[in-house]
Image 1 (tube, one colour):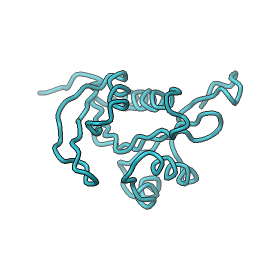
Image 2 (tube, rainbow, N blue to C red; image 1 turned 90 degrees about the vertical axis):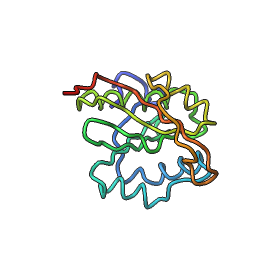
Image 3 (cartoon, rainbow, N blue to C red; image 1 turned 60 degrees about the vertical axis):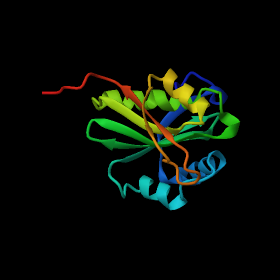
Image 4 (cartoon, rainbow, N blue to C red; image 1 turned 90 degrees about the horizontal axis):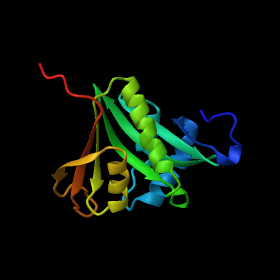
Length: 163
């Protein structure tokens, strides 16, 4: 929740998404990607068809400005979708979503965050690096719409306990 002392217009906060956020999530997805996820995919994630699925939304100036869809798998978090509405980009929304991911991951004693990002998406890669992610691997021809490679990025939150 946002701090109560800030005026409504200055608030930026992240919260778990609810089914009522579906239209905004789909709008942001379509505005952000040439090959967007279908509405039914987000609906299923919000309805907990997959018990590992989580979606968080960033609210800026009273409207949903971005979202992040991630899976809670054992002691890892895998980001599947991450998007900020074009009119809210470069305003701290993406960073707020990543800070939220770090916060909930640490609360759950998660050791690793992971995501894939298009090789050509330099702005996103810089954002992720600023949040502690590093390039780990490349998945060749990962994206089905154009065969572009994906960079696998990781963020290690705590040392692995390898017996």
